[in-house]
Image (cartoon, rainbow, N blue to C red; front, side, top):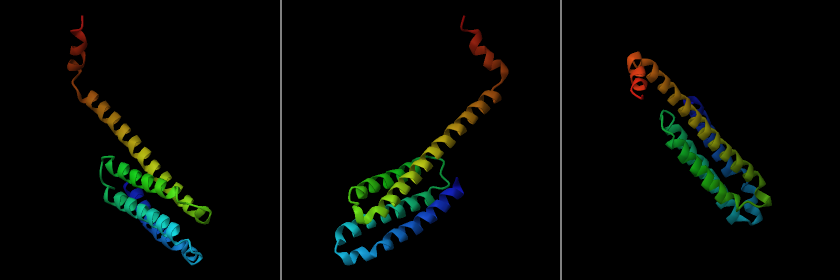
Length: 140
């Protein structure tokens, strides 16, 4: 998971650069406000999320994935409502960002659950046999 977060983080930085420069021809058509604002919002979301993924790659906690999902979700929804017919390719980047965030979040939750089950099994195996049966003897 550590390598995947680094690779996805670097790719997200590259995607943020692509998002910034892909619709520059629309600036000449006169829709400057919507184009610049929506692209800037999504490029910023990808950049912040990539930095969060790269920084929190060694963390065991789920906080980095929640923060990244919140950033991509909030900025994605905010720019999704500003997307019009000229910016239809921006909606692809919005959905891709949400997919990445949800995938890492679910993946981290699944890894934490399996780790907790393994810890519980090891704790039960390492406990002496007498102490396992003492608890059940005093019930009656």
